[in-house]
Length: 215
Image 1 (cartoon, one colour):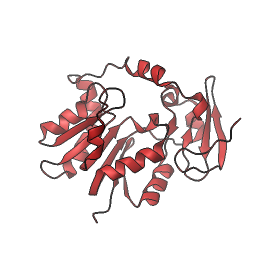
Image 2: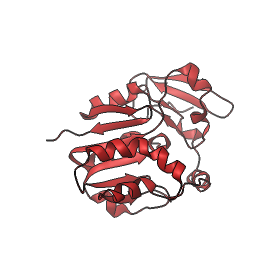
Image 3: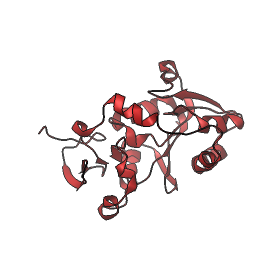
């Protein structure tokens, strides 16, 4: 078997974390990321087939309530008419719509549903990405991109559920989604903040803000 390294920090200090009936999970000793190794990732076609089954809808009040956990604190800190990017917006970009209702300009990007490369050439006051980072095979590369897209003082607003410990991980429904391949903890986000020189805030149990220095 090819040696496994961490997709976030490239460390080779990896230990086996958990095994279920479907996959093995590994943890990095350097950044605490829990992840599924590349040989057990889905193909792009199989991954998209699962996303196509999601029933998110711009008029779904339950989905809107779910997104208020990230929308409300993000909107409260944004200046009037800020510009942002909803990365991984999916086929129904409700968070972008909610922010646009407040007067902000929001560009859209999604690998499968909104693959406009030109929006990745601009700069933004904020980048939001909800329930996306756990799907990414190359989080280090993605973080570099997100931070390039942010203006000084800009906020990267993320939503993902956090690993607490291996005992709870064993019965955690979140790991059972085959498109979820990277699992973050508070320790992992502390590593990211230190590595990239960001201010870290845990806004809610599954909402994390990382802010670039103003200058």
